[in-house]
Image (cartoon, rainbow, N blue to C red):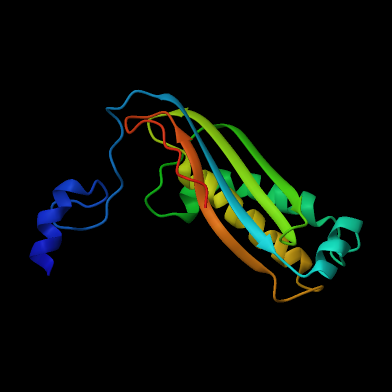
Amino acid sequence: MQDNTLSNSANLSHLDNQGQAQMVDVSDKAPTIRQAVAAAKVRMSPETFAAIQAGNAPKGDVLATAKLAGIMAAKQTAVLIPLCHPLPLQKITVEVTPAPQLPGYEIRATVKTKAETGVEMEALTAVSIAALTLYDMAKALEKSIQIESIRLVSKTGGKSGDYYPPEP
């Protein structure tokens, strides 16, 4: 099995010649404008949704706190994900939108940079932490809240080009 890993490591940028994890060298790449959008859903009971919408959560402003946590998390991605590069982030937006049909909230993060590598992980980290923060802020109302469908919505820029997966 190790021989198979080693033979495939030439095609995997995060593995060195011995098959060990490494941070990719992007020093030869030109900085370009790159953007990534990620999304998540947070599903809850109609009662919990109504309480949050009315501003009646015991811990305070659930949505503003989740949004701020997502922004802060995007800036910490390189600390949280071992092989991510620290990047100069020029723009981070996190939107937490009511979705009565779930019931719950849809979270969307957009992260933009001018750098040698992309910001997909920053956008995914932002929505993940925003969703976890929403859970934390509302768990006194309901412990069975579900975080679902964390996904990359799009990415633009870079050597691999633009990416727009089909909507789930």
